[in-house]
Amino acid sequence: MDKEKEILAAALKLFVEFGFHGTPTSKIAKEAGVANGTLFHYFNTKEDLIVALYNGIKENLNYYLLSKVKDEDALEMRMKTIYSESLYWALIHRDEFFFIQQFNFSPHVSKVSEEDKEKQTRLYACLLMEGINNDMFKSLSVDLIATLLGSHLYGVHKYLVSNDLSSTKQQEIIDETFVLIWQMITKN
Amino acid sequence: MDKEKEILAAALKLFVEFGFHGTPTSKIAKEAGVANGTLFHYFNTKEDLIVALYNGIKENLNYYLLSKVKDEDALEMRMKTIYSESLYWALIHRDEFFFIQQFNFSPHVSKVSEEDKEKQTRLYACLLMEGINNDMFKSLSVDLIATLLGSHLYGVHKYLVSNDLSSTKQQEIIDETFVLIWQMITKN
DNA sequence: TTAAAGACTGACTGATCACTCTATAAAAAT
DNA sequence: ATTTTTATAGAGTGATCAGTCAGTCTTTAA
Image (cartoon, rainbow over the protein chains, first blue to last red):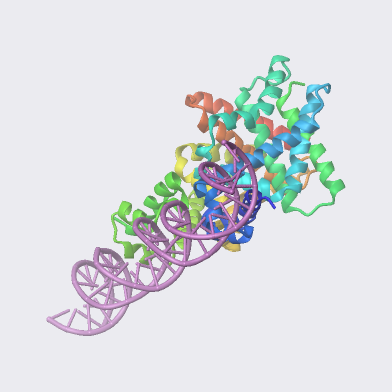
């Protein structure tokens, strides 16, 4: 048993249930089955732990998406892959996805290094630039397109988790909503 | 000087800057220029204060929107009014809007009563039902349409605040993005 | 004018929490 | 075999903070 991973897993579970403030480091240690001091051996501060957890989750998501996109596909297909797989991943890893959102609206966001931030957005940035270069998008700023895509995805995710649907129905909605957002941002 | 309002104003300012956890009640009291105990005279707990602040802000927003929509307008126009005015309001009341988002991703959301929640969404619910009844929308579930509208609005807001634009440019983007979302959800 | 109610104060408290410290055991390096 | 480094433990600590309390001031009402 890798204690560092135990700590991260326990922290994720508790943060999602009780929030950052609502989960003391002592409870994290207990849940992870390690001593109080061990937590601080691996992470200097509680905040370090939070940020490390965030970066780790983002890395996992990124790695997963990278494994799914096929470089030989057309841009639309690659975009659809990213979109759909992000949603599938989010549905399977509910705690992780909820944690990401929680983190993004917390004061801890500012503690993510520029380097890590760049890593975490590179994939999207590349695809978007490709679309711009190929003149596929409506004349909107890149940032606006990116934000619109992101918030659409969050919205669909929110809908999917708050309604208990069969996986075929989920699939259907994911496909349907991709068409909607794709039509919104591309020229016709 | 109304002490209760002073406390709410101070709390808003500090919560936005330092987060819920990062602002002790003692600092709120000091910022408001009242004694520590006075805060607890008006609000039984810190959480009560937070929820009261949220409900108050939501009420203000709702009141503002209600004052802007003209009942005689066509549905599309009324929708556009709600959309645009929400964004204008959010741009003027930045702290308030940020607080709403912060609150929505916090464990405190669950403390809003069903009654208050209903009040806060009635306006949107009515307009949406009207659209459904008039068969204007694509065959998507009401909840999905509502979520899509909401997240689109959040996305555009995020873009507007993170880019420093002239007010004519802002106006332009608000108009433009309303067309986009309207096309997304309505039949053609 | 006086009594009651409500507003307001700020020192205080009990609990909690992030983090430290000392100690020991295990593993790695020499 | 011995030293050094790393992992782990858990009791302890100082600070912080939400909420209390006992009492004063202010307003209202009789």
